[in-house]
Length: 261
Image (cartoon, rainbow, N blue to C red; front, side):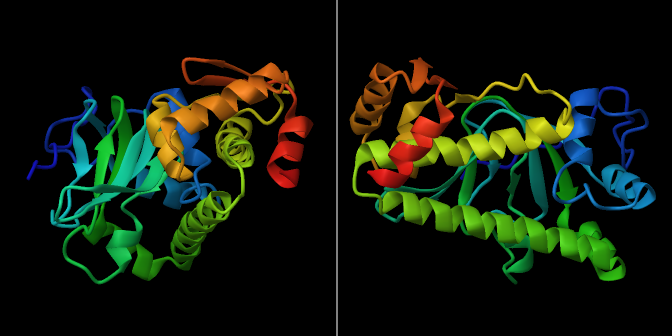
């Protein structure tokens, strides 16, 4: 079993300090401020929760948490990608979710009356996340109903994403599954970027799905079938793909493929 990495605090914070003593980098602070947990809280309470947590980093391949590790933290991804998955006793791996910036991981485990994580979360790239300790956070939760409402919104979003994935996997063709997956991923990416810059009318619809193997697994396709569907959509001028970097050129056409086929 791989141990969880130790928290990596910002270089300007004392090692034993409970929080950073200077502002977070602007991009990270904006993502935190507009996240589902903090976005609707009053500024003072929002700052208290930021001071409660810390910035952490993991190298590619490291585990944010491992199966049977004690539940001590949950995380908001700020950069990079991670995958949550189960591992069977025979060594088979079952994808639970791909996590991108703006996703919370491990939060639901903190409220399921378990002492240990029941699944794993592994960094697919270098990952930076903001982490909250579950014990102190639970104390805040008991005194501030607004935090409880925010947690409910996060868990509802997590459940809705699981339902969406199940619906996508039932679509009859690879093209319709891939089109629906792109639209689903696009909505999540746009939600975070557009809320950070709501007046940016030049927003482009781009996704980074590398590695395609995990994206394909997310909709129960082989990598080859997923790639063939992307090539087909590219030939029709609906998108452009370059090593997993997707640019949507015709959004309405992509919606038609997802809904009609």
